[in-house]
Image 1 (cartoon, one colour):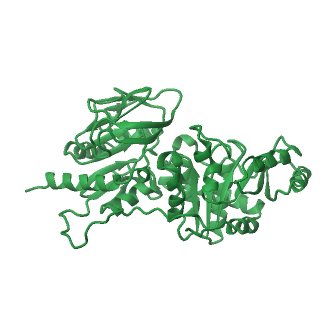
Image 2 (cartoon, helix red, strand yellow):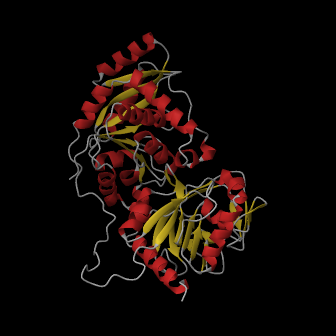
Image 3 (spheres, one colour):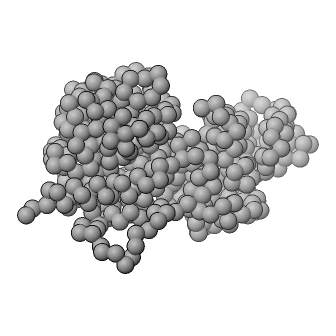
Length: 463
């Protein structure tokens, strides 16, 4: 069991202001001195990163599709350990699911699994007494759901607010605050910057989070929200742990190079992948050292492996290309057979070029940006034995990218799935693909990567 006060913030649909309210709540409570934790339902690492920036501890995703529904409460328990408040930001509408499985993957399903009260953020700019019918319908739709109340966003005037509160009072739904139309401005850096402002702890990102915190503190009833959060019962089950299920025999010999250095792409504000990746690597015996592919000109000293998560933004192609010293170091690491795992834009970075800009040249392929976004889950099968997965292993991954690679796959492809051609590259120790895989849903991956790093470092060590 995990005992932690918590709230799930959701909305009738996208665009009601849930992201701004969730960030503002975390920032406001953190300013009060409360230890807070932020989570995002679904695969969105960017939203999770900003939640972490507001909370002062890593933000995490809760994606039943990627890790399995049974791991969602466990991962929450792990990420919320020691927090005085956890805020879970929903995705889309409360009962929606991208994959068409709302009973396990929607925000409502996550809230039920966490036994958490839900606070509905409702954009009422064009709404009057009908808000009561809307909220009552959401409350009555699933009797397992605990709808704790609402936050009114984009309220026009004091008279408008009074009308809305009266209507909701008639159906017995608490109101935890009303935000005027101008009070939650769009202050966050543009979405095209991805995780870079968070990872770099850019001044604009920090300033935006602080402004949202000030706005929320001035308009919402934080004390009543905290009381609601503290009324949540314990989360069932034990917290997830990155530690191996069967630890090595402590009486046995310690292998040479027992703590290989694994370079993980990131910066002072976190990594370009789920925080569980680094936790799994450390638990398997690695020394994880972060490096910034946009700024650092060298890999960490003694790096035996490289991991580039899928949160690296495509829009930073010029900066990646301009960092020639690092590109050469990455190419040399791959040439020597060290493990190199790259997802999303990491795959494009390993190519010969992207949009005419030279990249690392590890893979004989060329990337080009296109209009439109490729997005969605894939149930994939490993086509080639690699450091990430043995041939024939099946995973669920997520894709979100504009740029495409030609060819789409190498002679030894990484993955295949129904309805699509083979994708990705496996070469020596390299596994590169635009499919993003959450390692917490694949037991043993961390240990597999560390073992490969240790073995590769031993093979290329000087005599």
